[in-house]
Length: 490
Image 1 (cartoon, rainbow, N blue to C red):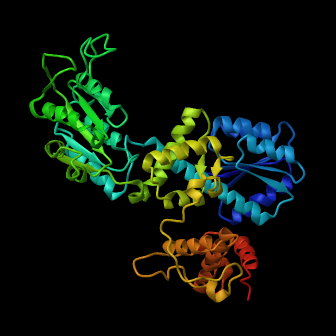
Image 2 (cartoon, rainbow, N blue to C red; image 1 turned 90 degrees about the vertical axis):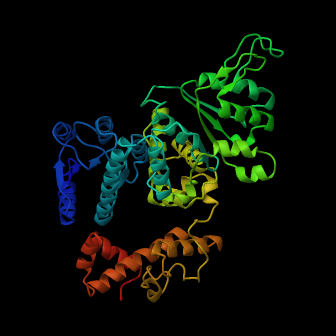
Image 3 (cartoon, one colour; image 1 turned 90 degrees about the horizontal axis):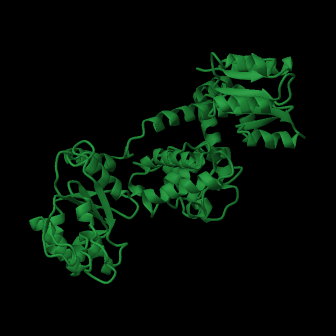
């Protein structure tokens, strides 16, 4: 484990923090000036840096800038005076994780350092994950089925129909099918050409697909190659195929059937060596029943069908997708990537995402521009997310709010119905409180959660606080303070 580094010219501050952190089992390294710390960075690096703001030979803000230039993800806590508002603002602008006002409560200081340590560990995991990001992301079983299908189709040129809601990533799947096929990058480097048939006016779509000869219609001043010609030897992706006009469906069927077509205004047939991948968010069987889609074309396209699940059916993929999109937005904007707090991430995971992956990507880009701090809290999320109740929540019998009786607090959260867990139980209660317009829901549920944990640990250890704190992974000062704050003293 990496050390917590402390730099302060005040020996008493260094001594007190060293002893407190050592009691918590955290390795510590202390420095009396910024110069020695910078020299030590040449050989080692900390997990968290705690720095005074005013020291002989260099200020903490100067040190912050130098350290951030070398270790941009390192959490840095700046110690400063209560009245020094300018310094606090400058610390945050310089990328500080938090600032610690002097004189400080020792238990709160240790708790803050622990939070910074957790952030450092989480950031390291995120960086490892980002470094391994593949062309498509998804650990959910439904996405694994899609990946397996792409693998099985990797040596085939068969026609594929991709179904799924708008924004679910159908073009990404089409590109992957092309890339891993004999026509793609692993093979002959054939082109991938995409066209959204719903986005092009009916009068222009035929020319877009098949091209036209010079003089074929008013404004056709030169011969133009269509998408079929552009995709020769490769793959043509026809997005939103369900919206294609009936007369063009007939022409497309002819190309798929006999492999040849004519440019608009042309008289010589052109041969087509193109793999067609089609996609739609519509129910094509229903469109066939309505007479809006040719049944013979449907069967010609529906050789292999891949269903892409909506994002609400693969919620376990939301965290890694969000981190990826935040990192990509930061790279595009030339800024440091924003990070999601646990509460913000929980809110994202609970959202239904009617716009699917595309909507999540847009939200992450919005956060990269609009979120006020590096760590995005739940309150910083767009209103569209905050307006929707938690997806897993359902109405449940009311529980006491605020200063709940100990009997209620000590009831284990795992008392959910069979097949459900304490997370779902808590989500139901959160939804009930939010819909009822109760104030301070965050604080109330946090108090219940902490009280339940502490009382359970004290029950397991038969009232021994130090042992309970060790089992919970918190300091003894922390458990004592929490017992007082929550009114758990007998």
